[in-house]
Each structure stands twice: as structure tokens, then as C-alpha cells.
Amino acid sequence: MPVAGLDLTAEIQSLKRGRNAVILAHNYQVKEIQELADFVGDSLGLAYKAAETKADVIAFCGVHFMAETAKIVNPTKTVVLPDLNAGCSLSDSCPAEKLEAHLKTHAEKNYYVVAYINCSAGVKALCDVICTSGNAAKIVERVPKDRNILFVPDENLGQWVIEKTGRHMDLWKGNCYVHVEFTRQAIERIKAEWPDAPVVAHPECTRAVRLLADEVCSTEKMITFCKQHPSQAFVIVTESGMLHRLRREVPGKHFIAGPTDKCACADCRYMKLNTLEKLHACLLNREPQVLIPEPVRARAEVPLRRMLEWSR
Ligand code: 13P
Ligand code: SF4
Image (cartoon, rainbow, N blue to C red; front, side, top):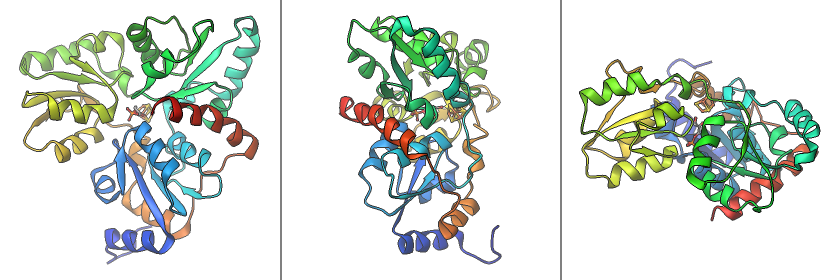
């Protein structure tokens, strides 16, 4: 609960120092959290930061699977998430029990399982290597050529990787509820209004939308693309927190969320559950913590470390 008269930002900074904590935030977090965080980035950057940190407490401002990733590589550290209900529809679309049953039913395929990082620790524990939107093609290219690949849980990202690598993969039928909402018609409307603005879309978007994009990339690569591209305006097709990061790091350029602000950028209701008040409370109480049963964590660490090594 917010405390009357408290300067939350100053309190959070002081708690952070006192607890030897680091605040890691995803690009989709609200402006106030991004501005306070020690590092703001995409899933890949956050995984590296979590693996490198010397802090005793990691306050992870993102969604549950991201905080779990930090815990997988830091079993002895305290990992707190401001709101434990910050889940992910994509992660939910692939429960570990279902994947386990699927692998048993298709045992003859002897699958090499590539899991997009947007999945639970239980799913990570069942797979061979993890990838993010920032390194998916690179990771898939390293999978032994004689193996059948099962890609979980995002069918849209998986399809995009197939197009980029030419590698056949069987796809799990999961998706992100935010990114599949963007339609080709909506993007066409924005393009008609802003014909010179390149369209930059996340690979979790459907193929119909990706086909209209000038660049399809992870949230972190959106920053580099917009910095380097000569255009002064861009249509951004992803979660709305990205607009804040872009406006902050690429000042002077214009980022278009659509004519109604709903057509090309939308809120992820899970990402938006984290607030400054909850961040303050979790640093104060060292709760709620993200905990993983040790056998699952240890098994999940193998494919995660493999990704960190292959992605260097
Ligand atoms: P990035 O790794 O590109 O930041 O994507 C994470 C995510 O949840 C996209 O919806
Ligand atoms: Fe999950 Fe989609 Fe939210 Fe990303 S935007 S955290 S994939 S529900």
C-alpha cells in the first residue's frame, strides 16, 4: 500500500542500496519503473544482466517467466516480482504437463525442443535450448541438422524463424494475446496516413502483419533500428511500453502508435500489473519471491546456459 507523503522514488533508491538490490525492467514496463531501473531491456539483455549481477536481491519488473529466468541462474539470490500475478498468455498456452505428454506421444520423433524464453521453468526443464526474439534464428541454426525440431510455445515467432532459416520445425500452437490483436487492416490504415514511416513489428505478430513490416525484430533491436535508420518517423507494432523506451533513447524522432493509439501498440495487462508502489513493497518486504523447486531449476538451467553460450 502506498504510504502518504512518501517520496516513493527516493524510498525505492534507498531500499535498493540497503538491500544490495538491482532493479531489472523489461521494455514494456511503465515509464516510472523504466526511469528508476538499473537496466531496461529485452528478454535476452535481461537474462544476461541477471546472470552477471553481484546483487543479493533482484527486483524483477517484468512478467513471471522473466523473473523465473533470473532465479534459474541465481538459485541462492532473492528474486522478487512486484506482482506475482504478472503472467503471460503465451507462457500459459504451453503447460509443462501438456508438453511432457506431447513429447511422450511423439517419442518416435526424438524431438530437439527449442523453447522461446516466454515459458515456465517447468517447460524450460523439458527442452534442449532456449531462445529469445533477439537470437531465435541464430539458436535454431546451431541445432544439429539430423534432429527434428519442436518449437514452443509461439507459433508466430516459430513461423518467422522458419522463414529466416529455411529449417523445418514443428510448431506448438501458442500465441501472445497482445500481438495477435494487431490486424493487417489497422496497419494498412496507419501506413496510408504515414506512407514514409517504416513499420517496425515484433515477431510475435501474425504473418499477415509481419508481411507489412519493414523490420521485424526484438524490442531491443527496435532501438538500434530506429536510431540508425534515416527516417524521422516510425510505426511501432508491439506493446505500448516500448514507446517510452524509444522516445527516451531516440529523442527527436517520432514514434507512431496508430491513429487511435490502439491499432499498432497496446498494453499487456500482465506487464502493467507492476507499479512503483508494488516495487517499493516488494523491496521492503523481500516478498513476493519467485521460487522454483530445485530439480526443475537445475534442469532448466542447462538449456538456458546453452542459449547464453550460443548467443555470445
Ligand atoms: P522481447 O524479448 O523482444 O523483449 O519480447 C518479450 C515479450 O514478451 C514480447 O511480447
Ligand atoms: Fe506475454 Fe504477450 Fe505480455 Fe509479452 S506481451 S508478456 S508475450 S502476454
